[in-house]
Amino acid sequence: MLAANGLSQGLYLAQLYGTSAAGTAVRLTADGNPAGAGNSWPVATGNAVFGDVRVLAVNVATLDVACWSLTLAAKNPSGTVAVVTPGSSPLSPTYSSGGMASATLTVSADTVNGAISLIVTPPASVVASCQASFSGPVN
Image (cartoon, rainbow, N blue to C red):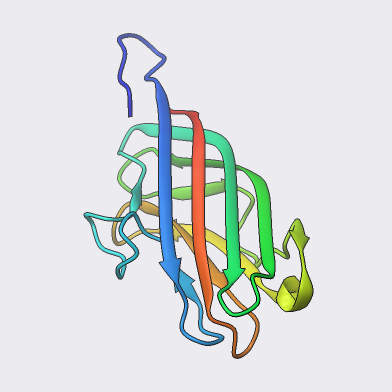
C-alpha cells in the first residue's frame, strides 16, 4: 500500500490465492495457507477501501473456469471491518465454462483478523486453483 499525506492515502493492491480440496470451500489468502493475521487482506482501523475485485477459479482437471468481476467497498471505522458492497450472499460467476457454473464466491468481513474474506466454493468433486486481485484507493 502506498501512503500519502492528507486525505488521500494511496492505492491498495492485493493478490490472494488458494486451492480447494474436492468440492470444498477455500478461503483465499496472500500465501494460500489458512487465514491468519499475517496473510489476510486487512483493512486498517480508520480506513475505507473501494475498488475492483477479479477472481479466477480453475478446475485443475479440465481447465474449465469460473470468473468473478465485482466492485468492493469496505470500511473499518473503529476496529471492526464491515463490507459495504457486495454484501455477504454467495455470488454466481460473472463468466464460467464447462461444469464451473455452480461455483460461488462469498465476500465477507473477517472480524477476527480485521480483514476482508474471499471464499470460493467449487462444484462437488472439483479441485479448483483460485486467484484473486484487488486494486483501488484506500483512505
